[in-house]
Amino acid sequence: MERVLFGDNQFFGVNHSSDEKARAQTIRFQEDDAIMAVLDTAIDEGINTFMCTTHDRIGDICNRIRGNEKYKDFKIYPCMPYAHKYANAVTELGYLGTIKQFVPGNIFTTFAKGGLAFMKKDFNELARLMIDAEMKMFKGIDTPVIWVQNVITDLLLGLGMTDFLVTYYNHIKEKYQAEPGFITMNLPLLLDTLEKAGIENPTICASINKVGFRMSGGIKKYEKVISQKRCRLVAMQVLAAGAIPPKEAFEYVCSLDGVESILFGASSRANIRQSKSIIDGNSVLVHG
Amino acid sequence: MIRAGIIGLGKMGISHCAILGAHPDVNLVAVCDSSSLVIEAFNKHSRFKCFTDYRKMVAEMNLDCIVIASPTKFHAEMVHFALDHSLHVFCEKPFVLNPEDAEILATKAERKNLVNQVGYHNRFLGTFNEVKMLLNMQALGEVYHFSGESYGPVVLREKGSTWRSQKGQGGGCLYDYASHTINLIHYLLDKPVDVAGTQLKRIFSNDVEDAVYSSITLSNGLSGQLSVNWSDETHRKMNTQITVLGKKGKIIADATEVKIFLKEANQLLDLKKGWTIKYLTELTSNVDFYLRGEEYSSQIDHFIKCITTAETNNKSSFRTASYTDQLIAKLITDSK
Image 1 (cartoon, helix red, strand yellow):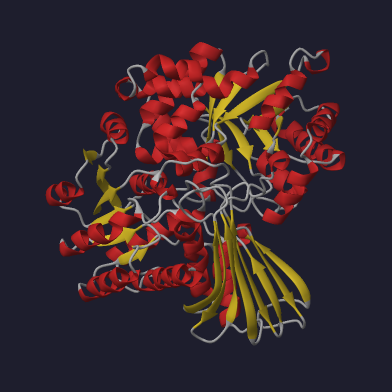
Image 2 (cartoon, helix red, strand yellow):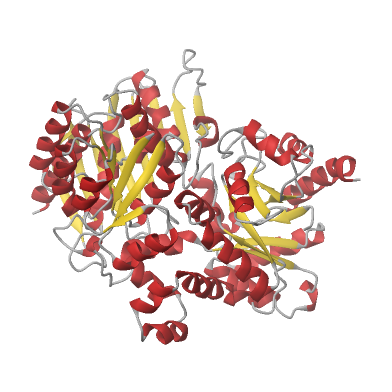
């Protein structure tokens, strides 16, 4: 993984500190051209990995990138699923209706014949079908790491359904020949759980910041786990939704030996350049 | 360890299930759902004992507490049953369909000294608690108006086939969305007692309303507006906002930030003249297990803490939820 990964929250109106800022961003990025322009800027500034959710609009971005010489070294790290799409569908359509809507039609009808009975027999197969549905938009794109979103990771973690995390892990390795990644808000618990399930040195993305925001169990527990280097770690929410000034925020996370990559999102060239250069400047010492 | 069971594994039930499953003081032992698909999945992939009959679950599992997250029309019957078996009860919102049942159940739980809570999670949000503190400290002086709003993208097309789209079952924007807004108004300002000019609007649903607009009066005489719409796709997810206007200034708050405008600086509260913005990051403390917002974990923590410390002064009790149910009934009557 590259040291710096570029995120997508700013494009889709996700802002953990302000719904108002989120709305302004939604307005700014309603055309794909606006998103592409920022991605081009990130590439100019030396960032070649885009970590993004499987939002419908990413499909359009993929169409622009696919086969384009300009993006031949550009990588996408998909994060699945875009949870609100499913959560709203469950409220409106129920579980079965949601499965019907999102599992591709032709695949669904193959087991719709046996209907419910088929699904009940093999929930892991259903999970694999849903992963494949989410991955469709990335066909022909370089996706060396494929992530499962924190709401799913942590849901399965809380439910104790570790076998689905293993199913995910194996399916991504086997079918996509990619590294499976787990996004989580509960790093210490997840790491213990994955190791118990036989997954060694997993790739994990977690909230890591100087003020301890969304670091479940507390910052001390996190720092201890990070220093043990039991996983390949991506730090997200490094700025704690803007609560920490960039220099201080990146210096802290760069000082943690055990963090491999840092994820951040920004909309302007100035912010992208500043963040990248602070990370690069502070990484030389630690990573040589 | 508190022995817990869950009835209903829909969106909220599953969320509670994961939070309880990871809770250090809780031993979640059983789950119950009427859907064979869901129960089969839990049977095959979870460690919980699975039931399709909640009475059987209660009879067999020696529970201390129960989380009820079934469709609203079943709440009253299930809560009665749980209280009869001396279980502490966490019930999803809205509490019950008939406000008289709400009062009976609140009294019953209080008499039996059982912990009773309804899942109004906004009461556990850092931003709204900041607003409550500011109002208690008279930051705005005499308050003369409020507005409570919730918007989100639930029903965006003319279809839908769950209990939430059916009349008389606790579906519709009024029960599902507006209950949150009403309950929050109560939590921050005072008990809502009267309504006027209510409009329940159907936008895409055939059988239930998709939007609720009304004027509300609180028991302290303060009046304000309620505006709720679950067919608004300009919001990525449910967004609840409260605005309070007073003679000394104004507060606008949602789940992520509190914006305070003061005509004059308030030294006691360390607020300057003009705008002060406070963000969730500084107003929220860490939880032991995070799933989808600190408030969902915090409300369960609170419920468990009320049980372990024998404290029945619950922050979101049946009693407070019964006032929300009463107001919902008044909104329905007023709209006719």
